[in-house]
Image (tube, rainbow, N blue to C red; front, side, top):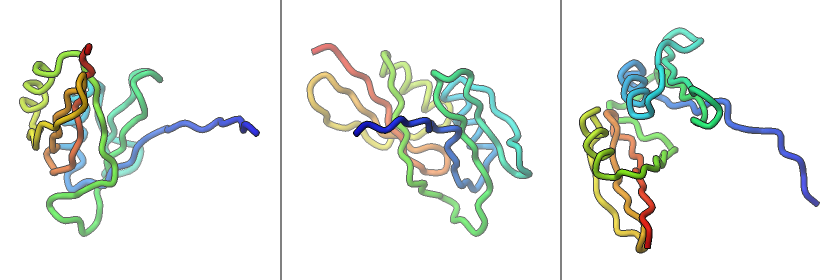
Amino acid sequence: MTATVSLSFAALNFDSADPATMAEFWGNVLGRPFGPGSLAGDMAVDATDPASGPRLVLHPAADVPETIKHGLRPILVTGDHDEEVKRLTGLGATAVAPSTQPPGVRLTTFADPEGNEFDLVTFQPK
């Protein structure tokens, strides 16, 4: 039996020690507009169209340590790995480690300004 699914992500919600800094970082990483969210203290990175993925909402978390580890690990894909590594580090990301992947896959793990990890992946012709 196949069920009809009518759900999709409207937004991804992240706890943050500094929502403004994180919204600026992720807005610049994704090339999307960012600004205040709909609730006091929240910041948001808007989706520019449905193909750009869900909106990101960053909100202040009470009693959070200086470095927050969220349960999500975003994966970004690019056709120009070296150029994106330079751009991401220029925006404040820290390259944690390159990773050994199967032939044709290049992956670098980064940490955002609050230490949350995300990956940059490039699929290369074999």
